[in-house]
Every structure is written in structure tokens, then in C-alpha cells.
Image 1 (cartoon, rainbow, N blue to C red):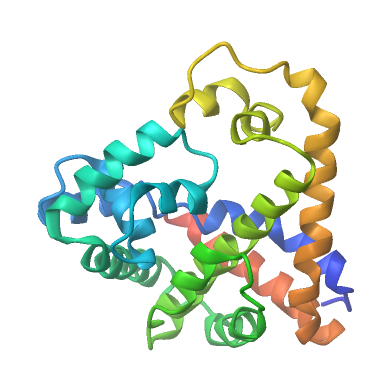
Image 2: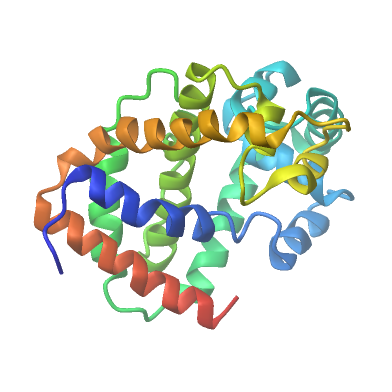
Length: 251
């Protein structure tokens, strides 16, 4: 366990949190839970569930909070999804699906109580100005058991970074579709999945600003990790690696 600055902690933990915190969202088990509840469309279940913490709002509010999905896709899926049981009920059910997914895979993994305790301090101390979707998810009740709580916190940390990243990409003058196309890990195929239509912007012309937005995201996010001591930041990185090993073993 190494002592880490807040920025080094963010740089170390963010890629893993980004991966782990989203694995449950469109997983077959999660989609099955939505289908059992009456959601015939898995993407509508995702949209209503993830955005349901915002309450009974117009789809434009979800467009603003999700940022990177094409507005027409969001409106169709949001209206379709919230028609099943309303936004708040969808959000609660989706949160339960998150907890259940993590509980199944992290139960018995050493250190998950400590992971949850450290992550809670970052989450609870964060100033939520402009971080709307994260604020909505933070207001949800967190699970009592260590395994589900730890995984729920990984999701919350992912939403925290996502909201900060929206601010950073906007500050770089990037549109939603430019931000996606300029990402070397996503590109045009990801843009299509998010509902955008070709022709897409020139990725090569965007990548420098996209890289700058990533650096800005890390810098802005690091202030929230200053609540931890240097040794606690190193501990958090190690515990996230432990969670990853457990989750990789049972995808």
C-alpha cells in the first residue's frame, strides 16, 4: 500500500471504477430483472432506471444529465420506460438491481466493508453543484451489507466522475458526439450505440481537446479525494483492485 496524492489516486482508480461500476447496468441478470418487472425493452429499463433518481422530469432533463446520448433516443426510451411504473419506482428498482448484482459477486470478499467506508467519505463529502445525476444517486439508500454497499459505491464513484467529465468536456468546447468520437476507446461505433447518426466529426481534429478534457476531469475530481489521507488513498486503490479480481472471476 503506497501513500498517494489525491490526483495520483484518481488516476489509478478511475479506469477500474469506470469499468466495474457499469458492468451491472445492461448485464443479462439486470435485464432479466427489468423484464420480470414489465420492461419489454432493456434500453428503456436502463434509461428509466438510471435516470429515475431524477424524478418525474421531462426527457430533456435526462438528456442534460446523461449528456452523451442522442436526445431523440433518450426521449423515446425515457418515455417508454417511465410508462411502466414511473420514474421514481424505476430508479428504486434499478438501484436494487445494482445492489443484488454486486452482492452476488462480492459476498465473502475481504475488505469490502473498508472499501465502502472509504468510498462513502469521498461520496458524502463531495460538493454536488452541477453534478445532478450523481446527486440523485447519492440520495438513494445504500445497502446495509458490505458486499452490496461496496459495489453500490463503485457505481456512485463512477457517476461522480461522469458528471465531472461532462463539465470538463463542455469547458473544452466539445459537443456530446465530439466527445464520444474523440475517445480512442469508443469512437464511431460507440457514437452509433448512443443514438448518433453519421457523418461524424473528424476524430483526429478532436483528440487533443478530448485528452485535455480527460486531464481536466482528473484534476477536478481529485479535490473530492482530498478527504482521505495519503495512506487511505493507497488503501482505496488496493481495495478496488481486490474488488476487480472478485468481479473478474464472476462476470
